[in-house]
Structures are given as structure tokens and as C-alpha cells.
Image 1 (cartoon, rainbow, N blue to C red):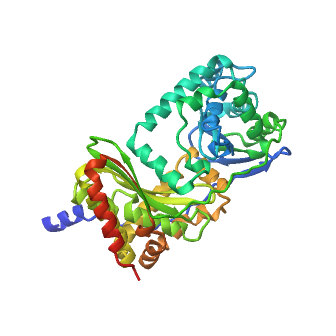
Image 2 (cartoon, rainbow, N blue to C red):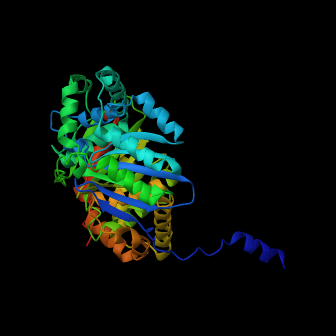
Image 3 (cartoon, helix red, strand yellow):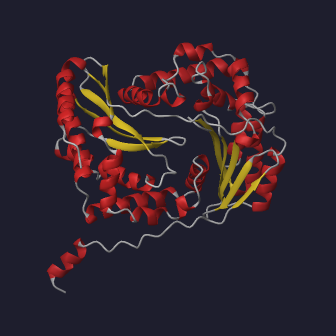
Length: 453
């Protein structure tokens, strides 16, 4: 074998495998008379089981004067039940070789835990106790509130969070999706009675899904779910107030004197996951700014050096969504960065990507999807996404195929339809005295930008 052939063989990577659709493992679903729904998925080889109790209750269910109350309620739930202290809960879970936590989001409160497979039914019973019988100990209320205040103040100090808050406020207005972070004053004012009332009014079996994935005894697990949760009250029906995001050309500047960087968020409302264009929109986002090899990243990070970690994202909220590009850029290049972002959006609207570029992005997106399905917690996350957004199983099982079905022309069409720079909301957090002239020039240039036919 000649040296040149040997070198060529070393340098030429092997052909990638053919993309395959995801086969959802056989699962068992059942519903209890009180409305609670359960899904069990045997998956993987490790002798562990992952369990999520998902309640469709979150910040979106707070009234205008209850900003952050869902968080206080969720955090305090973890402080014990009527029969177990927080320490006892932690010790029991540790004995099972697992962990347990509660997370509170915009739409859902999730109790998530794992343990060795043999303890699956016992873990379900413990989690059911935590869900149904929280003691809400008054002795822990101040500590929980103080911890939450620290978290909120830390988040509020971040320029990226400041930009995001103003961006979502501009799009979603008075809807809970558009609310600011809770203040110290709001958090301090909450009483134990308010926490208990929120729990009573917003939690119940009708809003709850139980997900089990991993290795477990199916009959024992079904019996554990049924026996420990069938007696829970039905509670309120599932309901999430629909948001009506606003598309508007607007620029919001938050002054941060002396800041060496400007934080940019620019975007607009787009379609939710149930829309036929959603998968093509995801591929387009990945190509434009949502992956490390994306056009905007190459432009303002690799070529220009204006920023270190720009990214774009699609936020899939309940029945609505929004797309945005975010970047922390050097102050003196604030205007130039915006110019290049819009240039890349406009370029994609004018001409489709090459087959080769698109194929790389499709392989990336399909690969990420496979990774998301590689663990029991990943499977649960995907199934929960389907249930929250009322999506069919084909959203998962045909996803790889649908990703690879997107054509270059479809990407261009998506960019023309949904990525409209003149209609985007722009938020800039930075040194106003330095960036004002740059932003004015950017706005003037944007107005002069010819329409894409």
C-alpha cells in the first residue's frame, strides 16, 4: 500500500449510517377513576428506575398578585409531609440508591426521582405522599423565601436575564409568560395560608401524569401507583390561559453604564410544536443560529470576534412559541453585531442553503434527538412534551424522517415566512451613552433594507 493511499484512508472519515426513525419502546398507559394518568416504559439495561410526577400547575396559574407563589409552594412541598420530615425523606431516598427533587416551571410542577429498580414501588409511595400530603411547615417558610429571594436577585443581576424579561414582556404583555421576576417585597408578603390555598386550588389528580421509565416490575409498579394515588382528590381540570403574543417592531434599551458588553435579544413570535412548519423551523433555527456551526455563530464569533457564545432558540410555550437570537457582544461592536445578525437572516431569506450545509445541520438535529432518547429521563421528557402540547406519537416516531425531509427551498421559505427582521422586537442591555448612535444607525439601515420577494 502506498503512503499516499494510507494517508487518504486516515483522513477520510467513514460514511455515516443511514438515519433511522425512533421506535418508541412498548409502553403501558392507564387512567385512574380520579383522572390521574400514568405511562410506564420499560427501557434500558441498568437496574434503575426513573419516576416523574408531573402536575400541570406552574407560574402560569398564578394571579397577578401571586408572582412566584407557585415556586414557594413547590419548594415548601419538599420540606416534609404529614408523616415524614424532609430529613426522613432524604434518608429514605438515599437508602434506595436514588435522589429526589422538585422543579417548578411556567406550566408544570415536577417531582422527579430515581432509585434502584427493586425499590420502584416504595419510591412511588414516597413520592405520592409528598404530592398528596405536604405539611408546609411554618418553621421552614422564611428559609424557603430567603433562598428564593437570593435566587431571584442573582438572576435579576444578569444582563441576559434582564434582556429576556423585557423581551417576553414585550411579546406576552400581561400574560404570566410576560411577568418580571418576583421581587423581595412580593416574596416576603406571602403567608402560609396563601401557599396552602394555592396548593388546594391548583393541585389534584386531574392535572397529574405519572411517568415511569427504566427497569422495573410492571405489575408491582402499576399496583403501587394505583394504591398510593387512587384516593387523591380530583382537583381542578387542566387549564392553561392561552397567550396572544404580539409581533411588533420595537427597540428597548436598558442602560448599564460602563458595561464592557451589550446583551442583545432580537426575535418575534413563531408557531408552536403542533404546527406543520415546526420541524422545518427547528432545522432552520439550527442552521441560522441554534448550533455551534450555525451561520450567525460563524459570522459574529469565528469571523468577526464580536462575541463568544451567541445562540438562537425556539421557546415552545403552551400553544404558542417565539424565536430569538441572543448574544453578549463587545460594546463598541453592538451595532455591527446587529447588522451581521440581520445580514445572515436576510441572506437565508434570499437564497436557500446548499444541500451539503443543510445535510450537516440535519445530521446534527437528528443526532441530538437520538441523544435525548438515550436515557429513561430523556424518554420521560419527550413523552411529557407530547402530553403538554397535545402532540401525536408520530411527532417522536417520525421525527428523524421529518428532519431529513426538509429541503433547502423549505428552509428559505421558512426564513421568509417567520424570520422578518423589520417586525422583530429588539432588546439591548448595555452602556447607553456608547451604543445610542450605533443603535440609531442600525435602525436607519433596517428601515432602508429592501423587501425580499
